[in-house]
Every structure is written in structure tokens, then in C-alpha cells.
Length: 295
Image 1 (cartoon, one colour):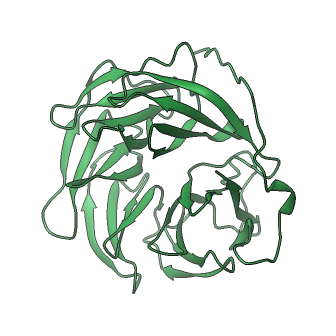
Image 2: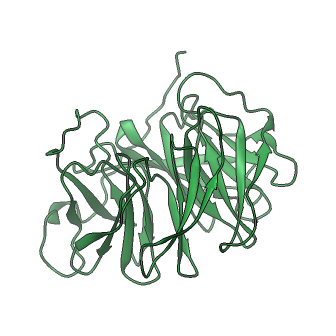
């Protein structure tokens, strides 16, 4: 499939020239060699969590120093998108077909949800007031997890305008500004959709002819939606309507330190993005890092 793509204006954000600084809150810090990061979650406080696509280890880092350690050993399958709330870390399990809830104090897995019995790619997570919602890039379904560690997961089949095809389908997930619907980006087609969390009905967001191809992590701040376009090494910045029905790209932000960033999380005046380096053949010695850019 050929996808038309308009990159528009690419604007490097301020602060990139200070890469590798040793001042408090460094704007670049390393991860373990061979780690292969994908997801990132921050908080509460100046603490970030990153998951490994290789074996599911979770690395916890102090953003004030850039130093960290593996605090939760993985199950041997990936840890991808993640979010924190209430002392818990919700983690999407990729090809493992599961989601896990980890205690952020101890690193212990408190709950594991087996979400898919066959081929799957459980990809990203968003938290709402009532649930954790998880995408599957292989199967047209969202998974609803209860907040906390009680209760069971439920599958919500997607219907309506989204059509799954070859490649990575539903990837990043967020809420609409009014909180009534969910947003998902379809990486292979570059389309953005709203999802009714009660029915699974999807509707394409009017992007005014723009494409979000290779769209990965989503982050909503007010009426601004940030979309990481991983292999393009840019973050698309969109103004979006309250109900999510319309959005327009106002700029695309690049940085010379980007090396296929996947997702992003915010802390104070910065966004933090792990470099997944999908275009670099991975080895146990391959270096990986996280870069911070100004909002």
C-alpha cells in the first residue's frame, strides 16, 4: 500500500544542543546495552519506567540524575506501552498476548491478564477514571482492564470505519479532550480514530488530508495531541476538537538525537522519548538511550 505523506514544517525543539549534559535533570541518559526499549511511563515524581522488548524487564530511572536500575525482571516476553497510577504500573505485553500490573515499590507482578490466545501484539495503554484500555495491533479489539488488581479483563471488538490490514494496526491510545471517547492511531495507514468505549464503534478523525503514518505513542495535553511518528523521527503536534472528530497538524518536531523514538511521557517542561532504534540490527552490546526535549 502506498501512503501519501506530507511532513510539513519540521521544527527542532530548544535544548537539543545540550545533549549529554551532566546538570540536574539531564536531557539524555543511557539504558542498559541490548535493552531495546519501547514504552515509557513517568511518575509520581521524577521517576521514569521503561520496558524492554526483548525480555520484559522494567528499568526504573531517577530523572534528576539519569541513573537507574532494573527493578522488575521480565517474563521473557516484551514489555511495551505502560502507564502508572496509584502505585501500580500497567504494562502491555506485546507478542506475549498479555498485560501485567506491577507494584512500583517492589517490582513484583501483582496481576497478569492473558488477553489473547492466538497471534497478537498487545501494544499500548491509556488510563481513564474507570479502566485501563489496551490496544492490539494484530487483532481488531481493545482490552478493558479494571483499575487495581481485582476483577477480570474484557475484550471490546472494534467495528465501524477502522479496517485492519498487513502491518502494525492500532498502536498508541489516548482519550479525547472531553473524555467521552478513546483515540487510537493506526500506524500502517496513518489514520486516527475515535472509539466509543461502550460499543467499540470507530470513526475516522478528519485530519484535513494529513497522514500520521508510523504513528506510535500518543500524548494529550489539553486540546493538543502529540503523535510520535517513529521511523520518521518526528513528533506531530495536532490541535484537536473536544470530541476528537477533527484535528489539524500544526507542526512536526524533529531532533538530531532521535533514533526511531516510539513513545513519550511528560515531566515538568519536558517530554522524554526512548530511542527504539528499529533500523539498527540489535545485539546484546547495542547501546540505547532516552532523550528529553522541551515542550
